[in-house]
Length: 185
Image (cartoon, rainbow, N blue to C red; front, side, top):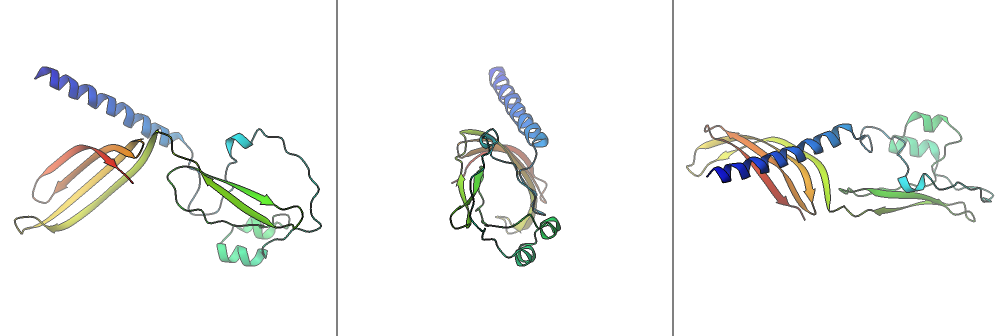
């Protein structure tokens, strides 16, 4: 019996360490984007070190009508007021749990721009920060009304398996806290 308790304690300490690492990683890492407004996004890390070169360009560049795109997409005012900033292409990139790299291209013969994108595959292991809190209401197996308050936090991912914790408390006086491992596909 004492051996089982020691094993449980070791597993809990390891999971607490992973959860703490995940929390610190997400606490100190800068979010990649702000969902409230358009921002300048960071360059792809490998590209920052590549030398910039001048190439001959087209006689003119095809742009998207600035006033219309600023209004339709709610772009920041600094784009509207700066004549040197012109929109040459747009893209709508589907949600993805990993990184999506995007590159803006300009055809130097036609002056037309486009954006290409590639979703980078997820690593085998990663810290995640998926949190959920909620309330459920319904009827239990006895036919009695029951309300449950719950919360979960997934803090690690190995492949498609997500590891976290879950807790709930119901109006019938029952409560529980559990480790969770879920497979997402």
